[in-house]
Image 1 (spheres, chains in turn red, yellow):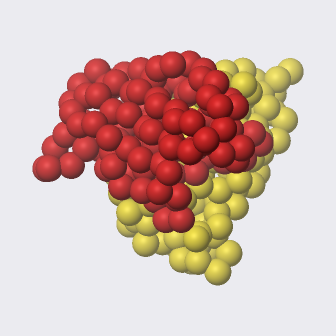
Image 2 (cartoon, chains in turn orange, red):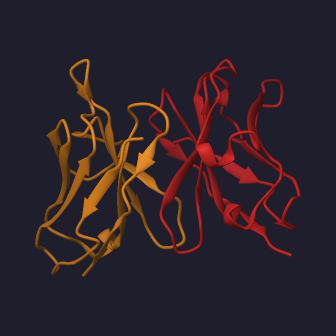
Length: 110
Length: 117
């Protein structure tokens, strides 16, 4: 199974500043010129929401303050100009094949 | 956006069975890969099962193989998760999701399953 490791476990950032979350996979997620890596945001009491797919493609309606980077086994989620509504837990997930696995989550606070 | 609705969660005793349902009112989910993902209280996300649009290709996480089954009712636009021989560790909120492939693009509100005597 592919193991996904996120860091840090929690993060406190000031309003208007930048937050960066890292995700590392135990094997490369790159195939056919794509990285099979997604980022999800989960606010308290809500289901997760897709933020980023294919490591760098923002989901529908996702503000451009959110950006994804990386390739192979090392990925990042960057949130610029942090807003109060960004308080959430963020998960990376590979969809390279079964079993799909998630990182353990990063709790972002302001 | 697709609004998925999961239902069927309940309190059940260990060893019991439960069937969860997922639908999307006004939207045809028969063209999409469908996925079940769960979240134990205060914990992270765990993929449980998924299947192709044609109802084939069911895949499961090891911990539920032989106990859970994902299926579709095309006529009723429903996806099911039949859960048998439930264990305490199956206690979680279960989310259904849809997408064009393995990627879960849309998530529904979850349904809560509690396994306890």
